[in-house]
Amino acid sequence: MLSHEEGIEADMIKFLSNMPIFRRLLITFAIAAAVPAFVIIFLGNFYLTSLATRGQAVQTSFDAQSIASAQETNLQVMNALVKTSLNNMFAGQSATVHDASLVASGGLIFSDLTAREADFDHTLATYQSNYEVATSNNMSNIRTILLNDNPTTGRIIINDQQQALSESTKQWHLYRQFQDTIINQLAPLENDLLQGKTLSNAQLNRAYERIYPTYYQANTHFTDLQNDWQRVTNDAVGMGKTVTAVGPSQTTPVVLATIIAVMLTVVIVFATGWLVNLTISRPLRRLALLTRRIGRGDTSARAKILGRDEINLVATSMNNMLDNIVRLIQDAQAQRDNLQTQVEKLVSEVSGVGEGDLRSRRKSQQTPWVCWLTHLTIWWKNLVAW
Image (tube, rainbow, N blue to C red; front, side, top):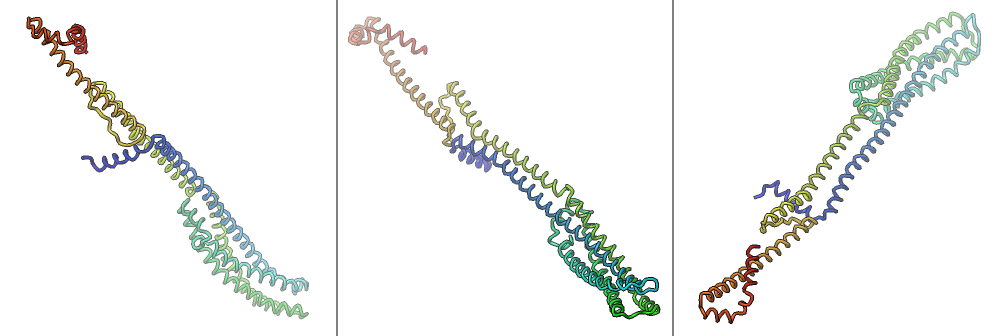
């Protein structure tokens, strides 16, 4: 009784043997060609997708660097404008320098400061929403690259940026409060001076003493804000360096896909060889064994028919040929036996004539075989020898 595995193999052989060899080989080699082609297409598509993803990540990191650098410059300009506004206001009314244009420029400076404050405030919120690696969907590709290429450094950059943005937001609100306070303190003084009022040195000193502590606090918070925002800029530069470098996030999938492609190709080659051996080579070996058995005189040998392919058609023809040969041999044996019986009868009659039995002689004379007895005896000897 066949085992379960042998039964499955027999069913497979029967199924494949019902298919012509050409079609079977065509399908097999088509699969063997299609699998590597599919793997190549998959690798090409993966590589193109990887390039597109990497390109998008590079563009996003460059945008983050550009925005961070621009706002770092914006902070420095705002602080310089505050200092310039303060200096112009008091220098224009000092005893050594008396220039009304210095005071008049304060309005332009205040307008510029207000615009820059609004720009930084909006950019800070946008930057946190779009470029914070830890939380932004826009930074998901960069987050993946950072964690895959260099997990330790990537986590440091992500955590440091998140902390720096949080500190920058807090320091910006404090700095803006002091900066707005300075503008509000200088605005009335500027209006008085623009209206032609002249302040004494004592009034200027008192105004300066009132404004300077606020300016000092603003400078202190500006230093903290600048340092925190510098960290944001440095983190953006670090992200840019990581995403522009070729790392494991690019090489590992390609290596894995290549290994899978090689393994699939090897499996297909071995499977093709196994199928060829199972459905072509093995049946041909059985036919060769069958011919050897026939050559040794085994007329009972028959080929096992499992399907309808070319090999099984040859096996069927061989079986039919063997059946015909066996039938011819059986007919020849029957004829030989019949002829042997008749010859033995003839020899018996001839022997009786030689012993003087006239009945046998008369019977022999009545038998038409007596005339060619000698020739028949010679033929019989040859037949028995054969």
